[in-house]
Length: 170
Image (cartoon, rainbow, N blue to C red; front, side, top):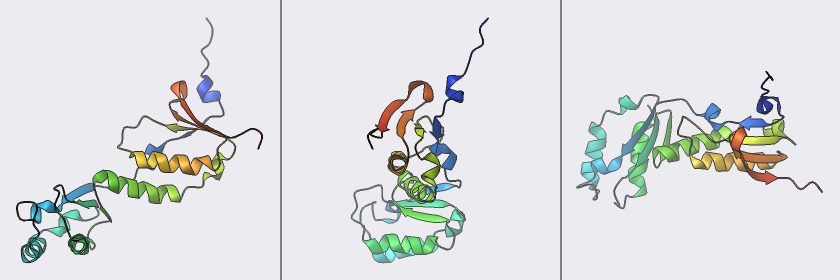
């Protein structure tokens, strides 16, 4: 019987797995529409009263996304006021959804990576993930890798989609 050889494991292909960089921490989304009259109208005195009575300590060390789930027009100061209340407790605060929060976290993390290790290498950006890696993270990673990699693919080694290849004449 012939021995099965794992050609993928023996290849020079470098796998860039965004899941390995997934930021740890409890994610919480705060919907400020709960503090608006009928979810749409901000009455300053009522809004401030709600914020004052809210238990902000429950967000200790959380990664928090602040958003409004309704189409209410919310003045900037309202989001800033929520941020001021959260700041002593939350590890990170972002405007938007949990996906926006993850995108911000990935932006910070991906900016710190030394991509020179991928210089002139064939890189595959791993596609399958058990964690909610936002599309913006994949876009940022591909931009960073393009400056160094010889080629970039997306997916799994057995079924990768080619995305980029340097011009051999360069």
